[in-house]
Image (tube, rainbow, N blue to C red):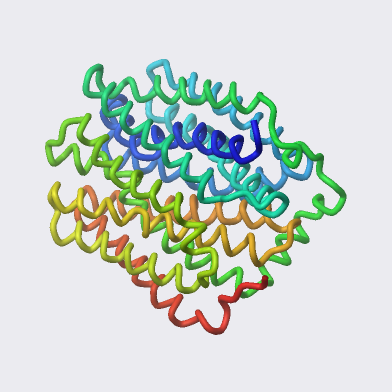
Length: 386
């Protein structure tokens, strides 16, 4: 298959499993393993902290010693084996350890695939949005299937779907892949510590990263408690899957048109729009905690997540040299996509146990902060170097 198609299928394979893990894992821990929301929040929060450290340290370390393709293959294999360990009945501390270990390995697949996308964007001018939309399709398929199987057989099937998804991903990643991903590390790419120093000395990059941290972290309540929130409203499992899919469908539409619509748009403008959409989304759920409003705000996922993510990926592709992209992607995955969500999961879990809608209000605060930070620095720091 050609490289565009390989990348599309890679996104599909990973995000199918992500559509099982991200929205349903907390609910699976509470419904199948009998944990409270607070206990599940502790486990998931610790897992996301482990994820942030592994993507920040483990992924760059692996990239210094292995090809990108080999990193993807090994992390997928280990993830599959760890998922099998969830099958027996386990007490809290075993679930805690398994989730921390799983979260340290499994999400590393994503910066691997995203780094591959950035490399192919530079070397072959492939369309990122086109391939990334297949990831959203995979996420959608997972949500629909989980909705069906949980409605018919119960929440315990969530784990089985994860195992099946990882098995399929493992098979795919061991097929033929683009040559660019099979290249062994060079002496230049081994200077990872120096690359991180260069990144952290780059003020525009730090500003963009911090705004991304706020915008992606603002999804902590949605990712961890969206399923539980709808379940508490009395929604059937199948319809919960349908509702969660609305967000992904609009995400697919966004990524399919993102390159055409936003390829020449400044990162600052992209982040401003994303922050506004994010703030509106969480404020509405806080003010009107009902099913109809939750459904309506799902449309804004393409803005709160999709636009913010596209803005960062486009920024590093345009602004950073080839040898810094993997490091930048690892930092983004570790800090913006993992650590920020992990940290916000703890207070959000406490607020959710107290009053569920307060958890979403706390997310709106992050969105507003991102808006004003972007407004403050848009002319001084956020610039693209073509």
